[in-house]
Image (cartoon, rainbow, N blue to C red; front, side, top):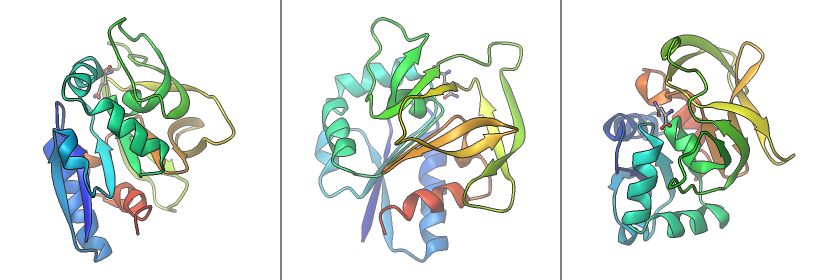
Length: 197
Ligand code: GLN
């Protein structure tokens, strides 16, 4: 039985828990999805999701709860981890516009600009192209960070908005600018969960 943890410190945690449950069901996999707040809950975990929200707050709480170091170690050891929006920021090696106090997992070889879309285009929805599907996927962008550079050959684009890369994969890691948990299409969650199976 698989056990997926959604880091539940701040942000759209419930939506990710629901989406992950549905995706497991679609895949016909028995599993539980847990609201992850303490390092003790990492015992026996099969995969981790870091939701969107506010990366300054998530950063502060991930340090305070003692989750930062063990989650980073698990990511380095190959545990599947997916970060969406603020979660992508948390996974990134380099962050433009970070506050001096912000700490990151620094696992994913990308440079992101934290508040790249700015105020004018705070939020929008647009069809995106996924590497693993012929159908377009509804991309929900909310004050999204922007992937401005891929820093190594290990990191591969898996999602595009026009010709811009908005999602990447690096072995066990997935980082997305958009929010797949806010749509009815579980395709991205299913793709991520296949990393455990
Ligand atoms: N730009 C936000 C941040 O820095 C992320 C926005 C989001 O997750 N919706 O945390």
